[in-house]
Length: 335
Image (tube, rainbow, N blue to C red):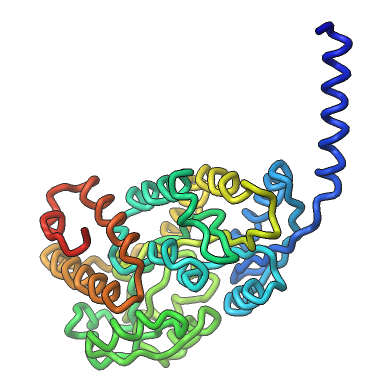
């Protein structure tokens, strides 16, 4: 084939592909960000929308400051895609939604391993549930226990205290009741206010919420933040599969995976932005006790249908791969 013919074929191919890209239907993506269009989630979504053009999607972004509404609009089809917390996204994919289970992902190193695995083509089938597909997972940051009184320094002293729980995640209320504490049903848009005005004594939140929700008001001079992650909070990119080109989800997951360091940098900046005096450390001797408590809670929550058992097995394997000395590695209940 001579050069002229080859060039003609290239031009012909380009002429066939270009109209398909130009005529790609616009899809609406609803982004939850407590700071709205000026927040970090929306900023990342802008870059995502640019990248998505190469995968055949023309995405229009809309910011939501109410996560409940963003999820509802996605569920009812007002949005073709959504960026919401994995906890809220559990209703669309229980397998992925179980990543954010109590104590299951101890560190950001563990989380990187989890997200790398979830972006593998080998787990393609697990990313889809009915009409919906998980098209990416990103870290939000560890959820730390924040108290309005440093005297609340053990599980025993949490008994009788009021703890904010997200009303759409029933496992939270159950675990709080098991501690002998009082769960107070809350939403993402109001749990910070309840803590700040004294309606609740304890919350669990990532450092990224500290400044926007003014959580320092609730902590005051007597409270603090325990440097002990309860949950590694993550966010999901969710899509209605029929609104996107074939193979879009896998391309999206691989691109999102590569944004891990960028997302963790934001988390790190947020954690360093919390005043050093606000951080509290749990006595080393108590950590093992709390690890056991969280493990027992996971096993119970899985048996009662809150968490996906297959995901629990995967997360345990990752924990034991990174630290084979853990006592749980000899326990077969999550295998």
